Length: 108
Image (cartoon, rainbow, N blue to C red; front, side):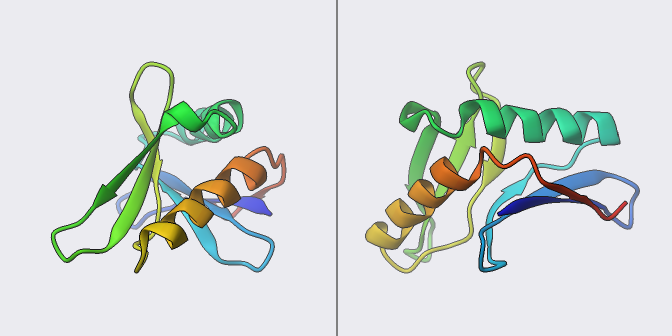
């Protein structure tokens, strides 16, 4: 489990939280600076264990996903799309346990 910090083609920064098997379990928003993206990682680490910070939703195509929000209700990250509500729940559990990781792979 680790975070991957990346820089997009338009010079914005984002991170992905990866599970032990290398699967992405949370995608961040885009940030203007690397420092802001690192603050976003810190926010995941701080908020990931709090079940009240997650919101589950269903997309227009019927797939399930979740959003992790900070205490100020700002979105920190979004999940991938899941086929079932149960799989979405498992994704939340994975972020809750893996989000505390302090390992950051800096690809910038």
